[in-house]
Structures are given as C-alpha cells and as structure tokens.
Image (cartoon, rainbow, N blue to C red; front, side):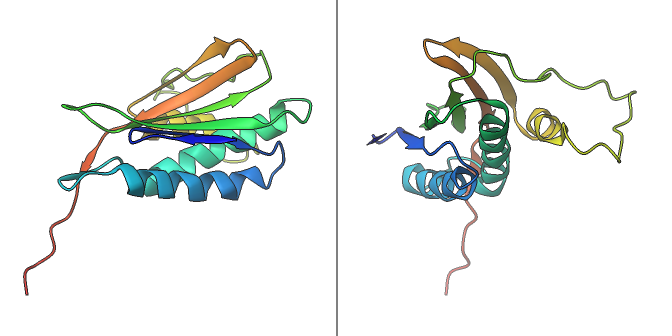
Length: 152
C-alpha cells in the first residue's frame, strides 16, 4: 500500500535487501515530483544515498518480515527541503546519531557503522523516535536552488 500527496509519499517496502534499490528509485522519483520551479526539494543523490543506508540498516537489524515503510515529505517554505523517514518494527534505537567527535578518527578498517556516520555528516538534521509499531529513523536535507539553463 502506498499514499502520495503533493507534499509527501508513504510507501511500504519488502523486508528484504531488494528494498534498498527500490527505495533509492522511489526517493529520486518523489523528489523530482515534488520539487518546485525555483528550487529542488533536496539533493537527490544525497537523499538516495542516505535512504539506502537507513533501509539497509532496517533490513539487517530488524527481525521478522514485516514491511518497512518509507516516508518522503517536502518541508514547507521558507527553508524547504525534505525529511525522509524509514519505519521498521524494531523497538531498539539505532546506533549513535549524534554528531561525531571530530577529534576521534574513523577506523578505516571498520566494516560496519559508516551508514550512520554518513547520515550525521551529510544531513542537516537526523534522529529517531518510537512509533506504535517500532521506530522511525529520519534525516532532513535542505532545499537546493535549481540550476538555470543558458538561453538559446
């Protein structure tokens, strides 16, 4: 089941790794559909990357096969931008979404944990909240001006 309005998209995804490329495509489509003439909803490449990280984490760290829900919402002016949430059935909070200490270096050999680092570093805000059926992990991205094309 999915819901689409002028300002938001809400889509249920399968609880499998196949949800990751589906979510990426849906985010690009949603941001293209809801952007205005003067500004894009947000940088779709960054939105896709961060969404993929959240969906992959939900699939990997949430037991069961209940669907994952993806919510893409356009934020109102004057700031604009978008907020993207991934809902899953796991009640446990995700790893650390606070700003990393710049004095502590990232271990280049570490195999896991980079997704949340990317979300913290590339989003304008992020966090998580409990929901009646588990949790929602979210991030926001600012609006970006659209590039003007040279006139012919």
